[in-house]
Structures are given as C-alpha cells and as structure tokens.
Image (cartoon, rainbow, N blue to C red; front, side, top):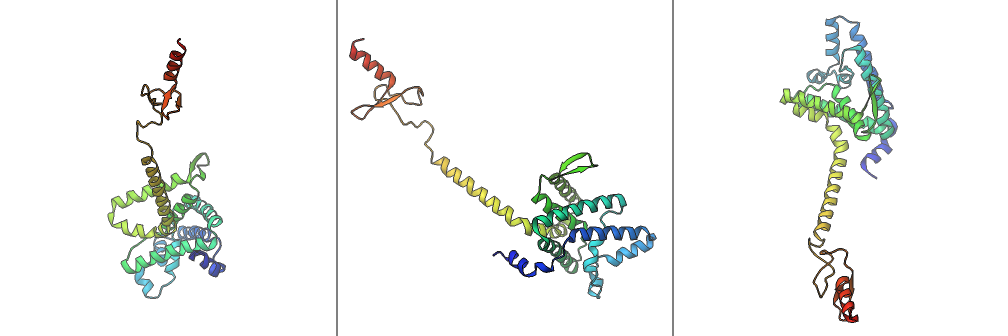
Length: 266
C-alpha cells in the first residue's frame, strides 16, 4: 500500500471536511471586518494576522494559521466571486482526492511557507495557496468549464495558464521572488511532479520502441520478388504477379505470358 494511502487509513478521521471552503469564508469575514474599521484599525488588524516570523518566535503562534485568512483582493464584489470560485474548486478536489489529501495539500503549503518565513524571512501571500489549488484542479479537470460574467465559457486549464502567466510576469519584474514563489508551489510539484515525470518516461519508452521498430524495417528500395527473366520487382511495377518456377526461380506475369505465347506459337 502506498505511503499516502497508509497515512490516510491511519489519520483520515482527523481530516477537516470542506477546508478550502472554510478558508474562503474566513477570508470574506476578514474582509467584512476590515471594511467596518478605520484605515489605521484595518492596517493594525492585518498586521495582527500576518505571518510575521519575529512575532511568531515571540509566541504569537496564531499567525501560523491566520495569515491564510488575509484576502487577496479587498474589493467586496471580486472577493465574493473569488470565494464562490474557490468553494467550487474545493468541492471538486475533495470529490477527487478526499478530505484527507486536500488537508495534506493545504497544510503542506502552510508548512513550507512558514519554514521559508522563519528561515529566510520570505513573505508569501495567501493567494498562492489558492493558486496551487487552482493548478491542482486544472490538472485533474482541465476541460471543466466556467462562465465568465455568466456568458462566456472558458476551460479551467486556460484560467490556470493565465494565472501562471501573471505570476511569471511578476517574477520578471522582481527576480528575487523566484525562489519564494517556487517554494510556495512546492505542494503542487510534490503532488503532480512524479506523475508528470512518469508520463514523460513512459513517452520516452514508447518513442524508443518506435525508433527500434522503424530501424528494423527493410531499407527503402528493398523487395521481396524479382523476376529471373526481366529482373523487374514489385517495386518497379506493383501490378506484376509473381510465380515460383519448378527451378525455384520467380517469374513475373508479363514474362510468363510471353513464355506461354512463345510455347503455343502465337
């Protein structure tokens, strides 16, 4: 039994169902609270939730969890749309993976991001958690469609590619973000990297077998039949019909016809 299956059978009962939906709802709740505060109060509240490694080391351990509740967008309309979108993705992932594996995916992300903050003081926003969830969903269900503005259908794989492109442009503008962003997507690489590598290895094996098969084929211009009289082959004239004589030599239909005509005196 694979390690992941053994872990799930042992600890699966501790999984939190609907974890993605819970995080998305908490983000909306945090946004609503911020909207009711003054600008100074909102800034202080976000600082209270942020993943601050110095304050974590001083004992403010709630920051290990609360930083994922900071919304990636402070527009209420877009936040609500994003929440509904992520809840839909969360349900899809949970139907495919089960609650335990979704939990492991999310807590794995939180672990590596926290390690990066404590060791290297990297600041990684919670939006990258949702991006890795989007990438996972798009990998599992690439042709699933959503409707932009409830009118225009678009496949989820294109949304994931657009999101990846936006992140790539962000890194191009600030190359120092490359390593933190890669670490923030480590859960996706761990979950899907072996499958991609296995598929590429299998494809390489298929191509190698095809190459060996093609190299074993007869070279161009090779023939099976050759007339012992005119020396023509089936390549010279595919319409020729060859027969084997008592001597073991082959003769084509044209030469056989000429021979029969000569024998009858015609």
